[in-house]
Image (cartoon, rainbow, N blue to C red; front, side, top):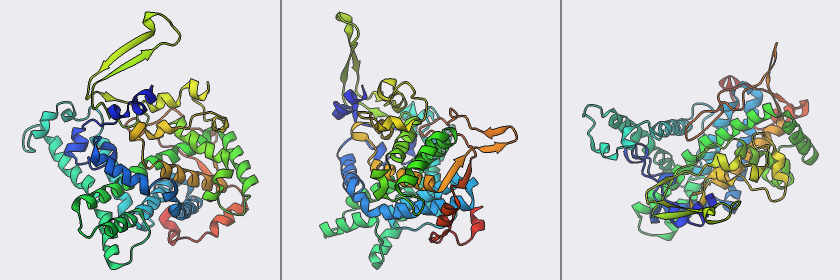
Length: 448
């Protein structure tokens, strides 16, 4: 059904609902995922698709590989902080690829800004949290009016959310003028822009600023969440981890770290990445769509015949439609009768659908999908090459987290859990220790 609506009828089903608190009042409507369907959205989308997908990402792969190795260094020194380390590594990749900015070893202000923005957006966009989302006319109430605390809150959040695309871009523009700019998405877009025009256009510069900003804030939390799900799965499904180790030892041995060149010869590791996205999708309901015009949905019951086999439903313009990623990715018809289990082997069979609903639907599918999948692969492959991921052992046996304990909300992540991360062998431990520190290991105590 999602293909019938979001793809075959994409002209009708590609709009977004107006989110009063998050978009209008808190100023987050500059982000591509929340933009209304139209020419402005298309201009942003084209820029991302041209410069941040497919082969255009290959020139950034060395950055992803570098920070994947920084991640295994950090895990070796302080494995208990695995979530913090994945967050730092993911943020470092995004900042360097998007803006050419190398982040600080700890407490980086840009990573902190992205985390704050994500937390704010989660609160502002929480369904039912603010009456103004139900009664839009309330947005005209002034801050001083009794009961208008949401206006004051929106004012505070607006400063944070609107600074996200602005602050790091200032660094790039200054470097551009000084002739010290590094390879990045922002520098590439600015070079294209300045080469194509002699008259600066505020409109074009704002689009570049928005595009880089959405890559900056959009990829951080979702990728970290997917990596948390990976660590959880490795604890709960040790046989999967064992098979991955066997493939890594067979293909690249224990003498080096994985690269993107190995991706095509590591089908099982690649299948683990797909199963992470399917087993527990980071955004179970994706971002809601909205109808731009009236539609009639025809539902046919293939099993029954006669006049009752076809039902027609009128759906008026403005209706909010959710793509239920969770239901699709847990469909027994698509993925077999063991959909609640973590089984990468399902993606080694012919004809099995990739977990594309994890990235949205139709024309509104996440434009950063290729980047997210690449980051996930190199992180997971590097961690599996280096470590055993085991449950914490207690006097009563292994401490296994429950696999059904996840947070609610737009982004769903595991409840906090612990794991025991140890080097797979003395050879791998030595290989990790021999890595250049990249400025991240100057003070090991900083990682504790």
